[in-house]
Length: 269
Image (cartoon, rainbow, N blue to C red; front, side, top):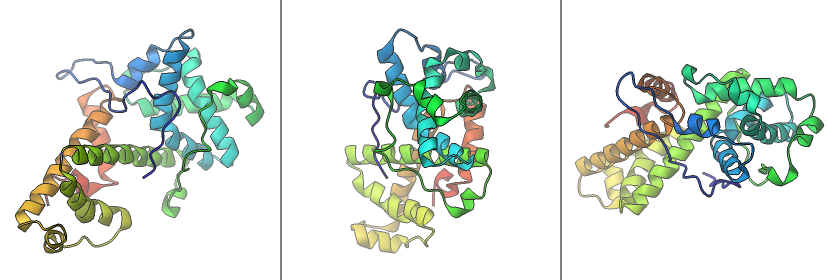
């Protein structure tokens, strides 16, 4: 998985989030509160915010634009322009209705408004200072499966959002497993759960896993998998808390994610 770093993200931790309160309590999530605090005069804050949003959402925006019929260069230019407009163009923020919950739904509405306001690629470029562009030329552009390419633009947006989110969460879980001395746990999870899902292959037996990694018995190997799955679920929920406004919405997002990686949503073998 590519490890993409974007200009302006150095002061923002990718796992920042605001914890939820109890049932019925309103709370400010990271994405909503950050964009509401965007200032026309604080360029450092705006650059960091653009970098954060760009890092987390550029893939679904780019894929949506491609599915709408824009070619590669047009989609890249419009993607870059949109993230500056959504932060610096106050009209987009002022029209956002946080009570509707999903931040990605707001982005999609804002993106369509942006496209209406942009008449052509040249107009988009004129609206963005050259020194503030975050280049898409240095990243690996997403390649959608043929089955996904047949979907509508909004479905493609959602698929790309899910894929990018899962990529970030898995990278985070893998890194923490290595940091905490649980590299073998991750390798077992990778071989038994993740690789068969991503490559659509039959998972190896627990006996083969134990032989490969010199694990004493199959129960221990199974428990390793459960441990990583639970870490994955915890990290995924924390990431989702960034962009919705209630526990119910987090649960709804999790149900949607299960369509893509159903085995990861389970607690055990």
